[in-house]
Amino acid sequence: MSKIGFIGLGIMGRPMAGHLLDAGHELVTVRRGTLDATLAEKGMRELDCPAAVAGEAEVIITMVPDTPDVEEVLFGEGGAIEGLTPGTLVIDMSSIAPIATQGFARRIHEAGGEYVDAPVSGGEGGAINAALTIMVGATEEGFERARPILEVMGKTITHIGGHGAGQTCKVANQIVVALTIEAVAEGLLFASKAGADVAKVRESLLGGLAQSKILNVHGARMIERTFDPGFRIKLHQKDLNLALEGARSLNLALPGTANAQQLFQACAALGGADWDHAGILRALEALADHQVGQS
Image (tube, rainbow, N blue to C red):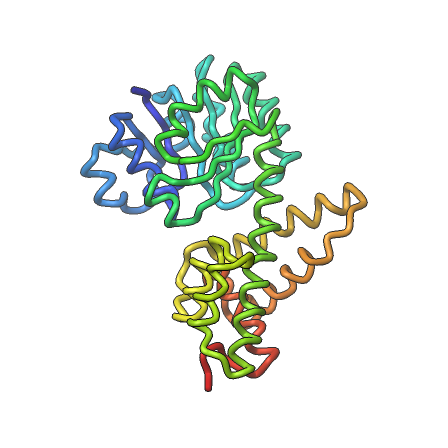
């Protein structure tokens, strides 16, 4: 069992940390308000700063919103690098910029640590059920060290390549997810506007080539109008920004991605930055002046 510093106890981080505690690992975190009661009961302890966490941990896991947040946790004042001991394994499970990730990996290696980027897909449900898909960028040694820990939280764990490759895979994942959510929303909106029973349309589509996890999970969210996150639109916007910035640097056109980002921006303008990303439907409904399920 390992001594793990887990920084980032949000919607997904909380259940992920819980699985590690259930597996017998000893966990510490940074003090941020009141610690979740369930995690505290399982023995998780709080320390004052990331440097203090690093001083007690063999493994550090970060699960925070964006690239600057990872940089602050690792390299800011009182950052983990100040308490890092040789051989410490640093696993970043956030979704951040691939190029920045490569720079973070170099700095951690120069300090004597081992860096692994391991972003996840599967949302809150995947985190709760320890069924996340985990995309890993690391050396072979780093991957083998991280694998037993990642297997506690995830179901499909793939070593994509070197540092930054996991984040590149996650950006690709977010492109596919955004465009598929948009496609499901457009299909259900069309069916509803044409007067069809959208629940029956979804049921039929799930038996054909259009079937997907997104049609199953997010299609149900759209019909039931349950837009509590899940995965927040503002976080998916951040991921699509990474995709579009990367596309510009590669001289690559991603028109579908750009369109999905505009629809997410419309949701934000409607006050929905914190909606689940299935809420992209609401931007399309505003354009159509029609709500799915409306007779």
